[in-house]
Image (tube, rainbow, N blue to C red):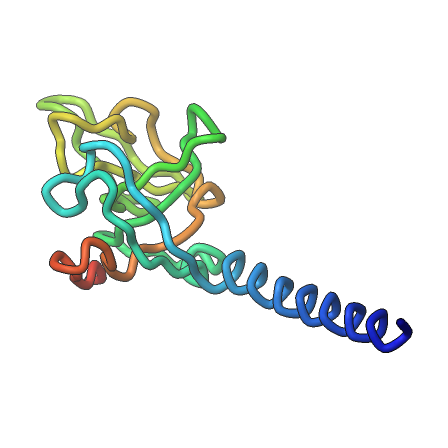
Length: 150
């Protein structure tokens, strides 16, 4: 009986240890994200799975053209997948006559499917603190595997 208890405690210890490693990896290094919605078509389609990294977002080092995953500014329970179009200080033209200057600590996000995307044109510049990760590549479906970095 004692051997069984010690074995069980050892197994639980391994589960906790590797659970902590997995949590830290997915929280601070990178993870997989399934995209939904048409806003990034034709680059990314609904149900595509992306491999993302968190280091760029944590260090606030995103570049113009990066595809990022962020918390939605209007619904924090939802995540959005958009392209960084403007960085702090950039002047972004919206429509024919209107333009916005991206403030410090913010980015301008737009979907690749301009006619079917709710993005910074609707909710304005997005705080960099809402960015969760940067997309590296599409891993699913396998036939569509591709790098998504600049």
